Length: 351
Ligand code: SF4
Image 1 (cartoon, rainbow, N blue to C red):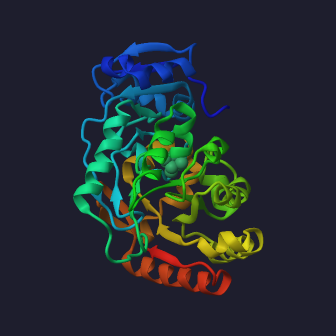
Image 2: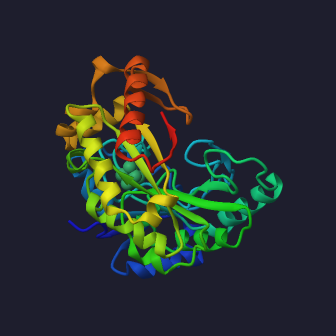
């Protein structure tokens, strides 16, 4: 099934009337348009329990157009210094562990936020207020890093609208700022943009055995590895996002093999500028229940109550994570694996 086979576009009236909204409609001329009061509350889409079994199809067949109401830039300090207001929310891919749908009930196709100029201005204003970065940190030695893709995958968003292209171009002209997003999809259209070294793509990688079970509808691990040098040549910075690390049988040998492979396949130039982030799995009881309705095999490795405990996340959600002792040992072991199998690769953070 193709990633996008858009049949219905649910749209707030103001978004529909906007230039960005009209551009999106023009990309999917056969789609039926249904006006909705709010992109957040579409009972026929988000609240319909019967749709769990059609989880993937719903993501392919639906788009939502809305306006991003809150244009605040939030501090982060891990993947990036700050989280920019999202240009989109939701995703057409269907990773079984994805936290993005956790607030939206039963389906979470892409919502495109059409007030992209306001989002870009919010980043500029925040940068002006913040002033230059004076001390290096793990996010970046020089620039303030703004994450563009907390609630979506920007590479797929770029198939739907020019929001990502606009933000990459915008940040390319902002001295002292850098855009960043993690991705599991290779969109080669992004190679034609001119990021001027001011966008960091973090290709998300995991052992193939995990990806085949958990990363549904994404680009293959081989495609993502192949893309690293191409994006570097197109003037992106390219880092690696190792997430989620799922603790299951043979996880250590599988990650070791992937790290060895990266050393063999990435060019010296790619290795010289790379860094990685390592994020162990968090999960969520509600998502566990949803997954049992459409992809129960994934839950055999994601839902491990004997090794997990409740956790309140930065964003206020009640999740589960590996128990503190389990996690501490695993993070230490992962660091050892990188030191032995990819000594060229700095770890920006691991948790
Ligand atoms: S690519 Fe990212 S946003 Fe999309 S389903 Fe996977 S984890 Fe979620």
